[in-house]
Structures are given as C-alpha cells and as structure tokens.
Length: 183
Image (cartoon, rainbow, N blue to C red; front, side, top):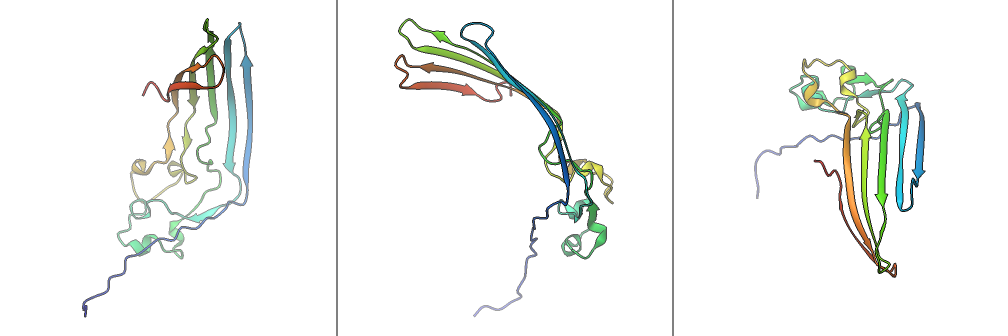
C-alpha cells in the first residue's frame, strides 16, 4: 500500500477564440517572362494590410507569470482576473508581412542527346511581421522588459538554388537543391 501526499500539477486549457472582425486587404502582382529562348524569369510582389478591427478582449495566454510578474501559477491563469486581459483590437495577424517580393530565374540548357540541364536561382524577401496575434510590443505589462517575450519576426531575405537534369526521353529527372543557401 502506498501512503503519502497527492500532488496535483496545474494545467492550462487553451481554447480557440475567434475575433469578431478582421480586415484583410492586399494586392499581389505576379510576372512570368521569357526574355530569350530557354531563359525564364518569374516572381511576385505583394502588399498586405491585415488587422483585428473589432474589440477582441482576451485573457493573455503568453508567458503570463513573467509578463504580469506573478509567482503564483494559478493567479497567472485565472480567467476571472481582468488585469490579465488585453484588447487585441488593431493587432496584426500572424505571419502576414506587409510587403514581400520574390524573383526567380532559370535557364534550360539543351544537351546534344536531347536531355536538359536546368539551373535555378530564386530570391525572396519579406517585411517584418508577427509570429502570433498577441503582438507583445503593442501592449503594456507590469514587467519592465518585454523584449524577451517578443513575438515579432524581423524582415528577412533568402536565396534558393537548384540544378535539375531531365532525361532525353522525359521519363525521369534528378534535382539537387538548397533552400536558404546563404544561411
């Protein structure tokens, strides 16, 4: 027979809560151009505006103990504590950069036996965005330093490359590629 104290560990139940209203506006311009035989340039440029446009009061669910400087776990997750609530109205939606741009180039080299070799390079850039809808830097918290909990993503760019070999009978191909080649 076992004897002793029973210790219960607290758990957080995360719930999905939809916003009442979100405004999403955008424009995408794509291009596809063959400047000369076997050369191909393509890509796109986008502009996106996205924000929560109605009141969206939510109990904060993101590093509560540290942001609200609460040592007690239960107090940091208490649904009845209005001090833990923030209105997320005017926050941006996650992973939605305002601007992005991609340009791709490939060239097909036709071999004497009918096979093809196709090198490719693509460059992609994205403006800064948020990784969650919390947008931590837009809100005030008891904690003086919130940068540790920042959910923003800096603007970035990356280069992708590949080279493909296509058989003369078009029955098979092989490709070597590198995503984010410069990192």
